[in-house]
Image (cartoon, rainbow, N blue to C red; front, side, top):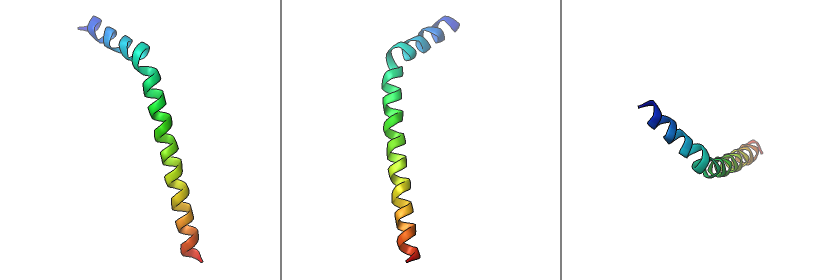
Amino acid sequence: KEEKEEKESGLKNSDGRRWDSEEEEEEEEEEEEEEEEEEEEEEEERK
């Protein structure tokens, strides 16, 4: 059982890490854009 888990994690690290990190970067960018939009809306409401 432990050997199988090591193999699976090894596959994720060697094969999936780059894909995961790219996806995380995209998600972070989307979150930043959403935050900027919220700030703009708040400024408009103050006026």
